Length: 220
Image (cartoon, rainbow, N blue to C red; front, side, top):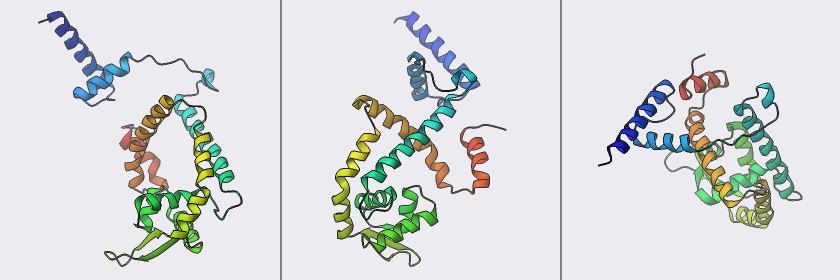
């Protein structure tokens, strides 16, 4: 047995436990240890961004870039539905969701697409008005309505899909396939973090403090 190797590993485990106790970022198990080793050995590229020299944090620039990318995506989507019966990008996003998930409760569709209730219901009513979506009473809950995409909705989606695909492709720009996969990995991780917070449907007056203290374990 290579006792030097065993000693080195034990020293590494002690270092992991010490640092993770002071700043508990990783789970205190083998998986957490392996992730810590992986991240420790990965070099962090030296990036520059606007305002960094004045103390602007990575959190700040990430938020700004996400907002900017969202604006770009909306602009391309608006162009993709120009001169069609689609009013907003949410119209075809809701239709795509119905095509993928099948019949679904109204509010489940609204939550699936991270919309507030009044806005989501307005989108659904617009789709019903266009005869792209139909609704019926739920067999299990008489208070709920089940909606599904119609043949007219599928046709409208098909007629616009080529432009919609172009819009989605241009948003990812000149990223390589490897970069796209890495971006998906990071965005999925962010989504998994935010989903349980979103599911709580907290009032705006409580959301920020609750999320900050509960999910980031911060104390103001």
